[in-house]
Length: 264
Image (cartoon, rainbow, N blue to C red; front, side, top):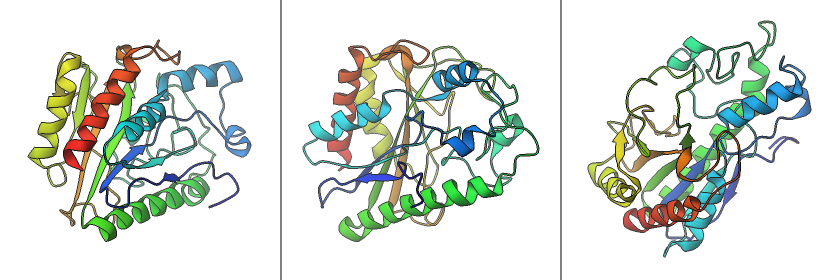
């Protein structure tokens, strides 16, 4: 890890747990050299962080891990997604490049300029994106070596009202959106998630956010790696945007712990 590395924190769970709770967007930290290339003033940057940070999701994962009968492992990003977004494809496969929000964001949630066109992306990819991807790959490899399988559960949140950057923001915004992958999300995993989160008012599948994170070394080739993305609508547990958590957080953590128990 480089000297900026409060990111890529792997928090151990039980040796025999296959579950890895992945929390990629919960932090607000932007290192100084990265901040220098962002064109927003400090107030505008704070507003952007309010909108794009999945606030309190690290706490939800922490409480779920503590409550689970078999403690899952956790992989938590300590840097803001405005540094790099580790869940994007780093190349032309990423559809969010169309709105300036690929692995390195050039635009904000409101489609305003975040970085100037002169800022090179390569150094950010090399310094932050690739080490993160390698560390996550190693974390999954560890679960495979220990248990013969890995279950990656992505823990996210999303705003009650759509933001301008969303490519698929029209339509329902269910209390909990479950993102799936045709290769890596088995019906049993999805079914367990639908059951435990139904108590919050229902779930939706792949709308408004689709897909889930699998390290590229395993993507599409390793069925022993299963994955699911959980997108929690923020009004269930916090004041938007960027405000404090509310009483719903504990109930969501308990549901996530139940999911961990069901699939672990």
